Length: 270
Ligand SMILES: [Zn+2]
Image (cartoon, rainbow, N blue to C red):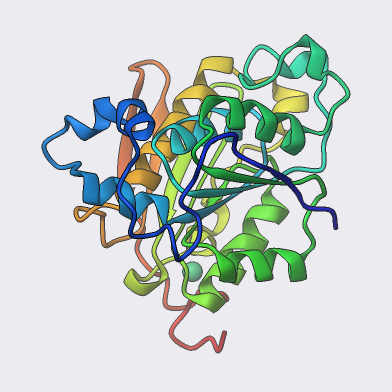
């Protein structure tokens, strides 16, 4: 597996020595609109600089999610995707341009994001992660954002995060149907507790198409949920949000643990 690191052009604070250093003038200006928020003091910005997030999938969900997580100043992003940019991606995969066609998505996204925020560290993982690789990365980050486009990957992430008791966010979309979720193993419940209601419409984007603004909405929602996870008012329960296209809104349902779930059930040894 090849890791490509895009070195920031300006000084960053990604090691222990820098962790306590205040924001430089450029960083203060860069983050100034967030720093004006009443619950976003400089100390919070410095804490975000210490966070590491893994984003699996750099397509229609991953591009907007990564853009706003990077812009907010999360200190280290790991971007994983083995696919290359195709022409049909451009309407909704907003980090890519014509000149990126044929390039690996993780690498192209990392290059674009490093231009967006030179103060953070971004690593591109230009392969489809196998289970062992996923497990290692999950153990090494503070939060996992699943932006993959297939149920098998989501179920592997679900199982690994349950085993490691790690919170994770995810979303899926097809046609006009969209879902997003937060799974907090400590609070109970997992993706498999949904049983036959698992949130990925059959067929996927290749057969059913995809309403481009919907993946944008979901990606931004994932970014906001991720930033909330690093705040003091993070939800302490697991939930699923279902998009209602007719009303342009999301309905949130608390995800209740199924005691017979094969992944997180009370009788299951994980
Ligand atoms: Zn479960």
